[in-house]
Image 1 (spheres, rainbow, N blue to C red):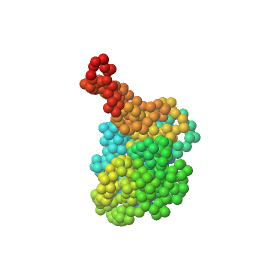
Image 2 (image 1 turned 120 degrees about the vertical axis):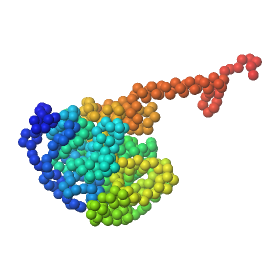
Image 3 (image 1 turned 120 degrees about the horizontal axis):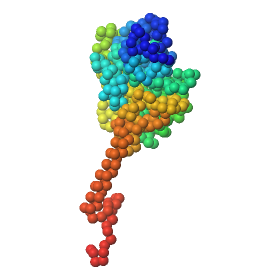
Image 4 (image 1 turned 90 degrees about the horizontal axis):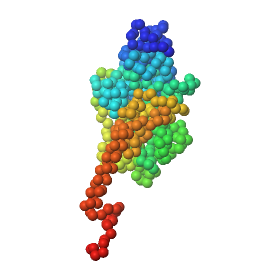
Length: 475
């Protein structure tokens, strides 16, 4: 499709809407607590040169959308367009979006990032400083997720305006048949990278055991990704019958919380009394079995927004039963990876448990574009032949080379199947890592030579020393 510029908006590439521009569209909107409806809302237009307008073909409902009813509702306004998991077809692009054109099929990550700021250059896309919500003290803007995160209209709509489209959208590769369903790629917008990050953060050692608390979409995907990475023993925990029944089909052992047993004690019993080496908490702020937190959510829900907003921002409580279970189940020195969303500010926290057991905690919003090159290997049935993904630049994505000191050792391959020449975390290039390694070997050799010279012999393992043969008469 040609890039004709609309006369009424310089810098915008023409798409199907350019001729016969509409004034309104339909979208799912928030109308009040537990009240959403499809309404007519103003049509979207390009506002910045790095914007794109996407005609939405599929969206999904995220578990965190449920938190909007209990906890974050005070930060929504009537008419806000909801949802943050969407994909579709590009209709228009600003002149600052060189790699997309009208007609391209794209997946839109739920968080917005520029790809080049200090945070983004370190793979921390959910903390993008260009889009950071400094007024509310929060990270990068999210689609359809309250004034705390920018009040950006969400994806359950006919059209979606995508800021920072020069970096964010994930392009479905050319050559993929039109008949391949959206569901093959839609999960790249949120839950698949979220699950991938949860497994990466868990850092389960070889031969170790991973427990997954919560077998919703993220928990199920995390368990499958763990198996994909070669983690042989994965134990899932849930109380929904269908989830508990489905998990063994993927090679998981399951614990049914409805049976009433102490989950943490049971997990310890399954692992020689130590506990799993790593635990993924994939439930979040609305966990069952947390009466105090539930009461707090109920109280906030009946307060007027003028009172509920400061209360939520300064004194909110989470329902932390799943998190507490994860902390008590994990073995000493293990890792708890938290992908469930939390928003409390005054939660009771078992600090002595965490400190005494020496636990490591990893958590936070998913850095979607950090993991998409890896995740697409699961979504794509064929390589694209080349990787033009802006997030696949060597300074931001790649494989952790085995001789690099950085511990991020999960290989990251682009869609073409080639491995990017850089370490995922420290961004060391192949050349710099090799030079550093050669330098280290040279230093070790020099020290070893000095040691031999000082000791008068060649030192062997375990402290043995090989000395030159003595001549006759030598002592």
